[in-house]
Length: 393
Ligand code: NDP
Ligand code: MG
Image 1 (spheres, protein in one colour):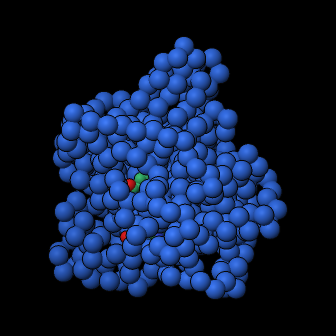
Image 2 (cartoon, rainbow, N blue to C red):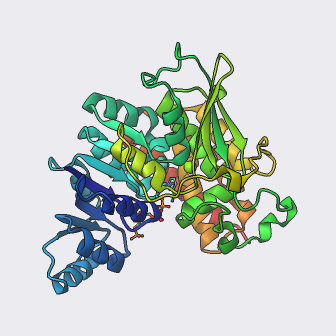
């Protein structure tokens, strides 16, 4: 029986993970769940999955959750704050940690899971983008097993040779082909993009996801973060990673080899497939996702990304090439800009401008400690907030 902690249980990935776990009660038991503020949802999950521990963001949320659980007659221990998140990620009882908090808030607990040598199912790409080599080193030193949940990286993992590790040299791998749907604005006239609403930006054509990653998909910053994520997960330099627009989201990514072979992983766009893959790896379990019917899909299309339409993609490649804390600056500025867009404080096209200005204004340094990374994250957030305060929509 594997004991699982889910960080970010009430989110889109968290809910999909619980759906898969519920199909296999003989294999998995839930040790702990976390949420930030959706307390009622977390209470309902506790009633169904009976975790030993539950963590929320604040003391007030913890009091509210305790009252709800008491009313249901549940004995789940309620805690709050970052130290408690790190504790449920690293507790001796836990085998597997699903890292599905959104954004930089997930870094500390995801790192705690890696440092404790857990099997880490990584959905929280921002944590890896920020901490890069530090995270990979921590996982390696502790013997943690890192399995990608992001559908593209999970696909690449499935298409790479079994003995690949993080060494592209000698593996025969020529390129990593990262597919991208292009999001809701792939064909919209560029000069109308400033007028789009958060609702339009969050209406992804193929995937139902949290709001932050949905906006990232619309700007294609999501793909940019994924390029950096692929660099760290697979040890591939920027030149070896190519983004291919594939609007149907049926091929989840590909690996091309020096002999001309291209291996792809296909499936319906449902995160329960990569979640089930990573949970059971190297075995396979049912996920609840319907089998792919290619005759129904009939057509698969591919095109090159348009960097003028999607400047965030170019900004992310530039941050990867710059190295050090540049990706952390990019990520922090993006988180602030996306939130400002969702709060109707800036327009859609101001997202990339804010990020570009913050990254340009702040010198990046060496990413040689988590403290250094967090300091740069804080600087970039403050700079982005200042910039946004001075903007008019
Ligand atoms: P959601 O916004 O749906 O869920 C986020 C989760 O994190 C919720 O449980 C939320 O709690 C919690 N949370 C939010 N803010 C904080 C905070 N400050 N401290 C602690 N917990 C917090 O996001 P998604 O599930 O869509 O995405 C989660 C991660 O997975 C992201 O990094 C995303 O990039 C990645 N990912 C997601 C995919 C998807 O299909 N959704 C695909 C690939 C990657 P509460 O509910 O209480 O707010
Ligand atoms: Mg993805």
